[in-house]
Amino acid sequence: MRERCLGSVAPRLSMILLLGSLVLSAEVVDRIAASVDSQIITKSDIELQIRVAALQDGVKPDLSPAHKRETLDAMIDQKLIQRDLQNSRYPLPDPAELNPVIDQFKREHYPEPGQYEQALASYGITDEDLRALLLWEKTLTSFIDVRFASTSQITEQQIADYFESTVKPAAELAHPGQQVRLEDYHEQIEKKLAADRANALMETWLKGARRRAQIVVHEEALQ
Image 1 (cartoon, rainbow, N blue to C red):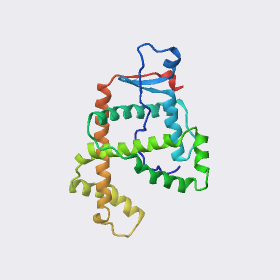
Image 2 (tube, rainbow, N blue to C red):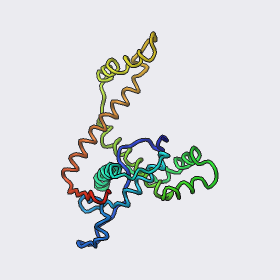
Image 3 (cartoon, rainbow, N blue to C red):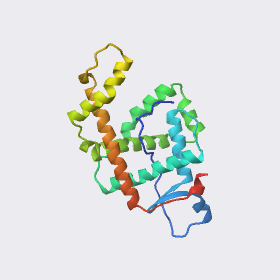
């Protein structure tokens, strides 16, 4: 499995569609997988999300009902985060920042002329679809940093405790006889603990946002 262009990030970018009227035809209703207040997520949105992510990972798209549900849950979280972004003044990334990321992705996985375009066609997606997902991943990273990471202060005692309980035993087991010093792992431990705390704060925030939103899921659309 390939390493992601921008890293892993819990949640994926979805297409925002507004309800056009109060009465929808049966054909349209059949395609709706979920609604988050006035926003909807369609079955095709979910499948597009899965195909783009599969291209990133270099794997076959998993269109099973279970994976569709997992993807839908992440897309619901995206809707909630996007709403918070719209109501706040969080800094948004410049789409032009994606150009070097895309170029590197092509060099690493599709170095020959035409290979990238062929891969997009085989997955049933476009360059714009990939850029949209990468832009969301970059936006999500910025959102977490500003909203949660800035409040995730880690103390020296927490770093020392994690070193003694987790890092030191593992390092001594992997390298018997070698001295294991806290200063050699301090920065890595601090970053990990801060990231874990930021993720926990975000999960708590998302649970509250879900409770406040009117979310309806149509399980039949995931089959």
